[in-house]
Amino acid sequence: MRFIFLLCIACIIALSSSCSYKQDQILFQKRAALAADTVKQKTTTVNSYRIKPQDVLQIRNLQNIKYIVDEVPTNALNTNGGNTAGTGQTYQVEEDGTVALPVIGHVQVAGLTRTEATKQIEGLYRKNLLKDPIIELKVINLKVTILGEIGSQGNFPLVKDNTTLVELIGQAGGLTPSANEKNVKIIRGDQQKTVTEIDLSNIGSISDPNAVLQNGDIIYIAKNKRAIRTDKLQNFNTLAQPAILLLNTALLIFSLTR
Image (cartoon, one colour):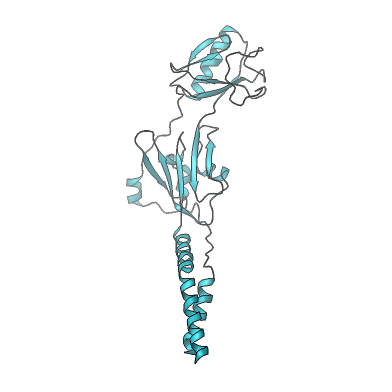
């Protein structure tokens, strides 16, 4: 009977101890290229984002840090609700694919990349108004969402062309110790969703064209197996501890009555 009593005490101590595993991420390891991997590798072309209706463009002339021209344009869309001096005015692309700019009027930008639209606007201002404009154009409404085992979950803007998954993870505070670095999912597409899996333990993921992020991407980082096992043990501990405590109390009472 004393043996059973001691065994129950040992079980309580074991279950009360939270089981934790320190998981150090193993990232960007060199791997020998296998013939099978070469065959399976996708040849994805990285295409620059093309401007669409309803996009919001931030435009400024670097020769004049206040505005595109000397006067404040009355048709500018200020998404921040304040003065945009030094950062440029914001303009929304209309349904017909044009953006209304001071002096030069409506400019067709839908279907163009950021670089193509910049050159087109520079050319029109040079022809109609400014001697040597240097136009900076940004598409400021583009964003991606990152969820799961990451330092900071949420929406993040795509502030530059060809932002990579690794760059975004850095901006979001890095992977947590519970993250499964070998299977990071990128959910992509408007109507037909596709899921791309990126293995960050492979150094080849740095140059993987599938890891170049696109507007609207959802990145999900799941827990690794050790973290899942730890959660299961903790859940079992929560359920089993009251039963073992009750059993131990009953055995203690029984022992004292003897």
